[in-house]
Image 1 (cartoon, helix red, strand yellow):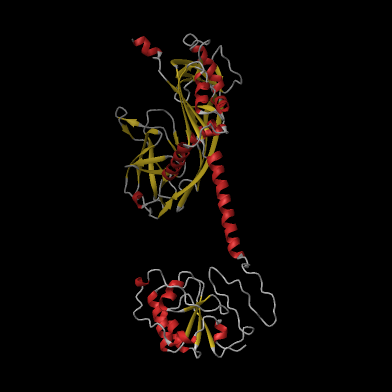
Image 2 (cartoon, rainbow, N blue to C red):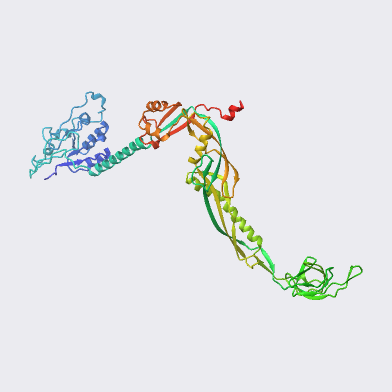
Length: 561
């Protein structure tokens, strides 16, 4: 197919008017068909139409706009540009707008040479000197596409218009987004319907407070409740703890040489007979003690001058200082003999004592560590026993807490040379607990005259705030107690049963159901969130609080009035 006399130029939607004019001027052909894109905004201006028309005339080009845009027709007609819907269509100058004065066409030259060369009765292809069979039909991207088909030599049938390949990526994205929105919607509905709804119910009842005082004995030696004698079985919880702690040794010991010497002893007692002073007897002077090395026998005392002068012969015995150190190096002096008041001693110079100080374990080191362990045990053992009793649903009798005798073992022993000492302490602790079902019958008996069993039931025994005063402790482990508590008597309301009854009930139905109970004065029902109109289907989502509407005075208050 030849196209040496006609040039077809496709205009992009982003092309500027200057770019279009340049394409026209650059074309080597005299007839230029400008195929316009859909919504060609650049030529929807009469000024741009005039510029395009003038550029064609200056370049000696015959311009034909290939478009079916209805908005461009009046503008093309106003400036005298030819328009065809396809390249096989016959070019025509569209009708100008009804008000031609509204368009400034002073610069448009009508009746120019270009107009005379174009025959409006011939197709654009024929104007280029081509036979109709060899020309091509160009489908323009317009809102109203041409109904003509392309005449090709192969005469193959053109595929039907309007068929497009689906955008599967876009479809998949929409599908995923839609699925996610659906899942979020389902989760949101589940949370809104089953998770978030709650019901708060506050019931005010006509109750009476009664003060109860009960004396009983808690006994670890009995297994059954004895109501007649008020003896309650007690659970004795035992706890044993063992712990070791270390600390630096702070004691000092002089392991130098001990001073030695001799002491002359004589019997000056008024008793008859000899006196035997055994070995290892202490003789002391000025706070210093020396130990005899061997036994010595002293003859019977000889006294003169009315028994005021002792002339008994003396016997010498070697002695060694009780402790090492140079402080025992003393001169001659008199000594007293431990255990022998009638024996007198006179010592020689004591010599040879030296100093050598070492670090040892003192008794104070052991006692300090032992007490530290005991304190740490005692602070935690009481709470630990209490938690164990509470875990068994027992009432804790805290005053029964007792501490066993600690057993402490030190390593190394006292006075042993060491830089640190380790003390291991083992201790036992006990505490009593009693069952609620064992104490409540005794409370019922004590308040039987104050509570009308036909009209009232006990809604609370007040055991959480009860006061237990410990009394006598017996050797067999029995402990006497006095219990003081405030008992609340009123209508019986079983919270678990009530929750089951109001499941699924509307607010009005729930109120009426609760108000029908004897002793109920006021009922407040609050469903949350705001869209909830019925009580949740799960009783665990329902909260019931029972309050006293008007508390009656206690026994003491009544008596005082």
